[in-house]
Amino acid sequence: MVRLADLPDWHREIFLKKVPTLPRFSGKPWARGPALAHRRVAIVTTAGLHIRGDRTFGAGTAGMDYRVIPGDVASGDLIMSHQSVNFDRSGFQEDWNVVFPLDRLNELVRDKLVGASAAFHYSFMGAVSPVTLYEPKARELAALLKKDRVDALVLSPV
Image (cartoon, rainbow, N blue to C red; front, side, top):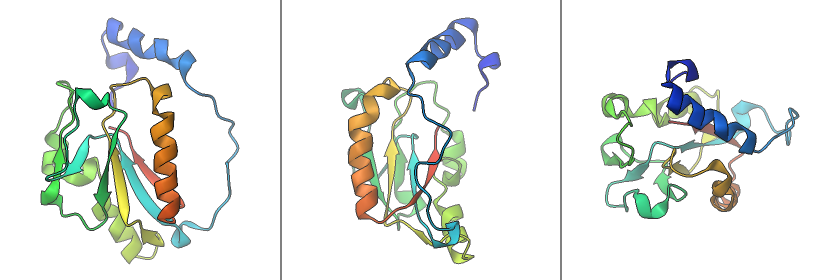
């Protein structure tokens, strides 16, 4: 992830102007849960991923839509259609775990450090819309995660 200090002044200012508009959360956990070895974990990424044959991400979705990725997806069946011309795809092309660490999650499950991997994982295309506009889709996604009995997430912001 790039550091603010490494960005050109004009680009740094764009990000800094967004800070006051971001939601505030207390430092307290929202809910306690079981140990990680007993949790069901899903991955949520902003890498603009979808399975082969699913609709691509595009300007019409304004970045607030998401795609469902089955837990048994093969790496060769996962496509990145992120729309930013500044987005570096080379890491994903070399190892999908850079943006979608499903192999690592499955290893943790196999080693009994994590209880289970979710049946489904999710991908947004980040960096397009103001974060405050994501709430309706976040609530929709929360309902899907609850239905899948997910009680922990790996967030992979890209």
